[in-house]
Length: 101
View 1 (cartoon, one colour):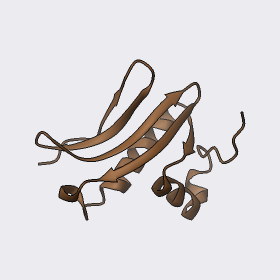
View 2 (cartoon, helix red, strand yellow):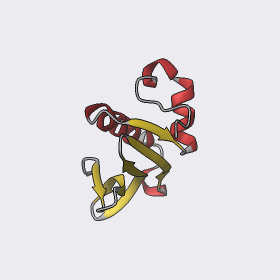
View 3 (spheres, helix red, strand yellow):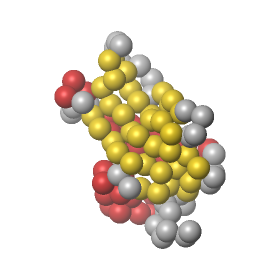
View 4 (cartoon, helix red, strand yellow):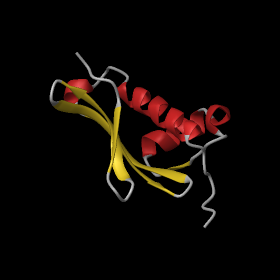
């Protein structure tokens, strides 16, 4: 049975949203939070979790977290960037498209 998505951050704001199955990580989205931005570096679904839509579940959780905490998303992760481009209207409120610093 799959666990709920969890977020683990260290003191510097680096960490990941992840999904566990038993004691094993089956999907993760590596992020960092700094100021008003959440940067997404990498999304990976491990073989045991493939085909279950876990990437999209991680994306939905990250988007929800960003909105709740009024963060803008810097999508360095190709998966997240592709989703944002394909569904721009859905994400334009949180997508930091231009590097503004």
